[in-house]
Length: 337
Ligand SMILES: [Cu+2]
Image 1 (cartoon, rainbow, N blue to C red):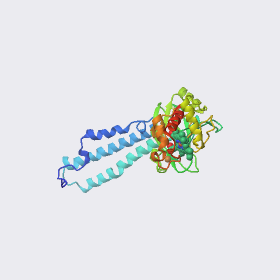
Image 2: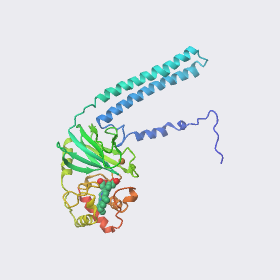
Image 3: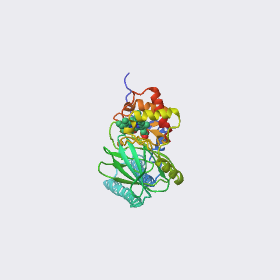
Image 4: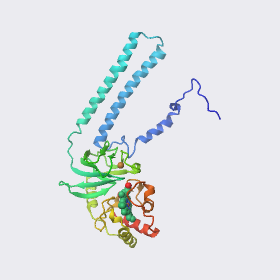
């Protein structure tokens, strides 16, 4: 069947689709991983700047649209050369200069608010292929608690993130809290996060870092001060001993299968550093860097299909384990509250 030709007078643009269709896209502008959901001081500044930029753009657009309508509908005639010059000077020089000056001033004012911010706490974040290590430090730089892929912050307090990498360049980005900052080999980049609203926000590695870059997510939980302290001291504790016969069996499988060579479960002989600290794995909402919900079924699936789920991952696939061993392992990991 031949394609229908475009007829003069017919709109060739998708803009002619019903407005409701396009409005649907706006629903993608909010949510747990969005710069429009500003839940941090820095993200709020960026959003303010964005609204100013948007307002300037709208003003310029309305003026130009007005001139266009005037010249083509209200007074459609040949305009004088003088009129045309004025149009070019005002529209091409004066207006952009004004708009850009407004944006520059707003930008500089907002920027100075973030200079030399004091922070209450230091957190070291290491980008790894394809997950995140979080270490909470005391005033001497000693690690108080370590966790992976999910971290918590107290609301209305500034925390300084020290961003490093274990391998290639990654970029730490929780859009609702602040802009992205790269993690570069041999450097420590700093980012102060000061959340203004409690809640759960998603983040994502924002610099291509290998085959599973797109599956390198993270979760930031902003809590009130008490809940945060409770969370932090729970994370600092050693692991609970397995509670049921199935999870006791799971711990044996864990230690015998060599999981402890890469994973630490504090309070047990497992003290590996190559992979995420699993001491409180069950306290996380998601596993494998925010890839899956944290439940028994997904843990089993992760262990039996690791390399298929995350190509290039530095964890071997344990498809040699039997179903009962996998179930025991999942039960053990599910007990690590
Ligand atoms: Cu990455």
